[in-house]
Length: 180
Image (cartoon, rainbow, N blue to C red; front, side, top):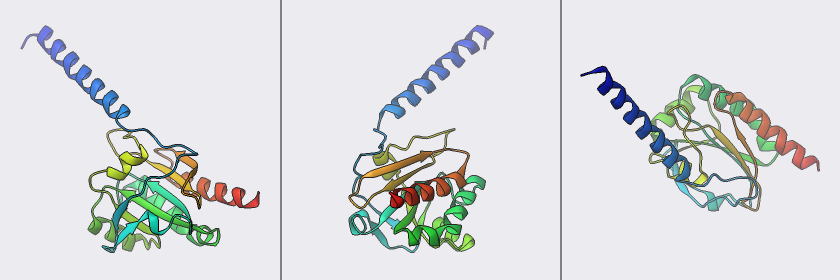
C-alpha cells in the first residue's frame, strides 16, 4: 500500500470515528437539575428487581453510574459510598450504583468490598441512555444524580477520574439542602 493510500485510509477511519462519536453524543438528552427521573426497573446484585417507583417519594435517591466493577477508580468510588453509607442513611438517602456489569459481577464486587447499598445491572445501557450519561475514553461514563422526594434531579456531579468526590460531594449537597 502506498503512503498516500495509508494517509487516505487513516483520514477516512478518523472521520468515521468522529462522526460516530458525534452521533452518539446527540443520541440521548443528558438529564440535568430540575428534570424528573425516568421510571426504570433493573436487577440488583441479589437477583431482585429494583423499580424506582417503589422508592420515589420515600427516600432521596443517590444514583451513581460507574464504568466497571473492580477497576481502581470505581472501587474507590464504591468504597467512598460504603464508608459514608450511615451518613447517607441518616440523611434519608438511598445509594444506588449502576453499570452494565452482570448481576454475578455486581454480587462479587459488593461482597468483596462489603457494599451495603444496591448495585444494579444495566446490561444494555438502557438506563445510562435514559439519564444521558455519556461515554468517556471509550468507557461508560461516571456521573452521580441526587433525586429529591418528588423524583426531580436536584444535583449532578460528573468527574471521570475522581470517584471519591462523587460520594463526598453528593453527601455535602444533601446535608446542605437539609440545613436550609
